[in-house]
Amino acid sequence: MEDCNSRIIAPSLLAADWGQVGAEVKRAEQAGADWLHLDVMDGHFVPNISFGPQFVGAVRPHTGMTLDVHLMLERPDVYFPRFVEAGADRITVHIEVDHDVGATLAAIREAGCGCGLAINPDSDFASVEPYLDQIDLMLVMTVRPGFGGQAFMESETMPKVRAARDWRRKHNLSYHIQVDGGIDGQTVAIAGENGANVMVAGTSLFKAPDMPEAVEQMRLA
Ligand code: DX5
Ligand code: ZN
Image 1 (cartoon, rainbow, N blue to C red):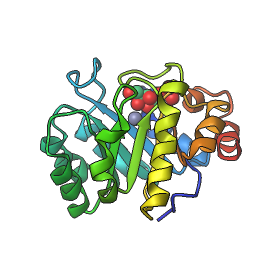
Image 2 (cartoon, protein in one colour):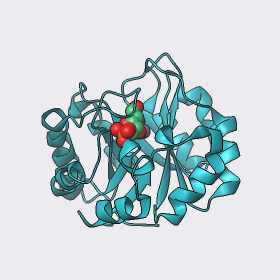
Image 3 (cartoon, helix red, strand yellow):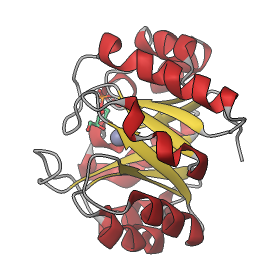
Image 4 (cartoon, rainbow, N blue to C red):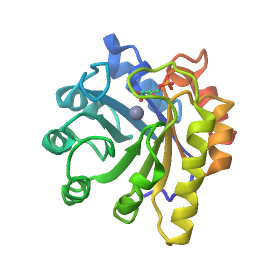
């Protein structure tokens, strides 16, 4: 298991060519990516619909990469077991939805998956504090969720990345700090300096002219 100080590159499948998803997943792995980030959207919690557990199951046999499933769902407590069955290695749920977050995080871990908690740009860091000793990953969204290709929201989100880093140090915890949205060769350095180690990127990786070079640049920036 990678530790929270190692830089992890996680391309978001949202930006891939879904018409040839198997080849795209292999392309990401051969480009040197560590995890594959899967953005699941239900059209209620976010104003977009992406894919469900069956699609994650279709991806699973094509890669040995960690499948990092980001549930942008109104009822992640109801649906997460289907993603466990589909082969998810990590499952992240949002603090903003109306469910028993603590119970859901514990149940995800109980099912053998890494559990993550996500916070949107407009949410206060205080809302996640009660759960930080129960997670393996903290996702600080750096765009409002729903669509790829948006601009990095630095001022609204970097203070939360720093707060997550400081809290982890103060409480001697070891969760990963992940950022997702508008991450490219430049913004990845800002996120890293503030304490993030897991970098989710869709557009800047899958749409890069040279994906291996873009992954390497993101790893070293
Ligand atoms: C938003 C999505 C995007 C996606 C990455 O809900 O989660 O952030 O993963 O999008 P890019 O890297 O294209 O900004
Ligand atoms: Zn995501």
